[in-house]
Image 1 (cartoon, rainbow, N blue to C red):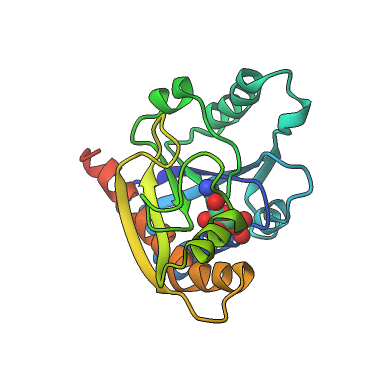
Image 2: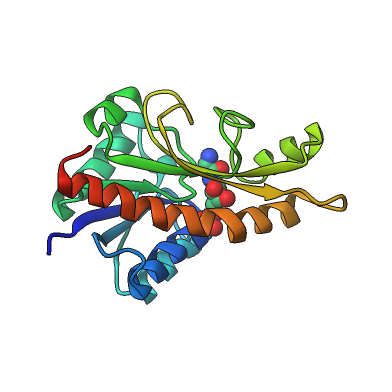
Length: 203
Ligand code: GAR
């Protein structure tokens, strides 16, 4: 059976990458296969997770590239070499250019730790998202998986899951709950859904 070749782009701890690896091993993801992991930061723990799972891991250090286009060209080279057909942004902390997202229309998905259109767009990443949610005083937050286009966090929504905010939450506590209850579930489920749609020609 055809499996969509997946590249996972990361920048940090890689718990979402781990959720994808686990989903692949447990049979939640059957229509795709992770063929490589690319980190924008050297030493990211996500790279160790990839190596432990026997997945080819690469680093493209943004700070060592002369500009953003060189950064994207280096990533593109790896994607071509590995034959990647779907790109998953799993805690990837760089905004991709319109050139790059247009070239990969409906072939890039991202997980965002809030219910888009709340607390999203440029400047809203990682813990900052949860700080903003707590600062606003929302009682419900969550996570969103969406297609990536030229607008940061602006592409079509694939899945969302709501998570309750507790009275004594800190950004760290809320981040953990959102990951556990939402991100680690809807990211693998969305990956499988999109891989199926790619195979059937629906996207
Ligand atoms: C996750 O919460 C992810 O949703 C978020 O960064 C964290 C990465 O954790 N991504 C963004 O904020 C992107 N805008 P991880 O490295 O453990 O998966």
